[in-house]
Amino acid sequence: MAARSRSLARAQPCLERSRTLPPAIYAWFAARADLRVDEPTWGWLDASLRLAAKLARKEFLCGIDIPTLLASAGLETFVSPESHHRAARLLPDCTLVELPASKHEPFLERDPIRNRWLEAIDRFITERVDRHGACAPSPMAPPPAGMTLDLR
Image (cartoon, one colour):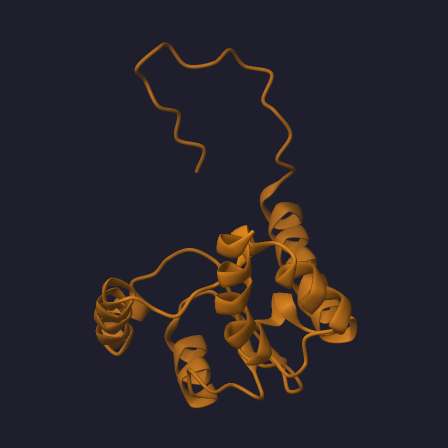
């Protein structure tokens, strides 16, 4: 029980950072130590800084050729909303969703904010499935062992 108490104690600061987190969701996460998010490690920081350096390069963003859905939280404290807008301009196929009342993680927000984000995800996927055909299983036989199938 002591280990669980320490785990919950470590979870508290991270959960408290989200002032918009609904009490029921906060309680749900706080009761599940295995879902906690600890403070960043040096390895996480190193990987984040390397990724930030890549994202700062215009040619990197312009070279991403897959549809991208990007949320821009209005109450963002980690990544500037200007960076979201820059990325949306440079990514060849980007849909930017503005969430003015959201903090950094829209999945952990109050229902109206989270639902708007989930609806945006659903719409984003649905539009692409409709545009490129349904993703139903193909009637053709699977490829032979060791061979990959390119569905582009």
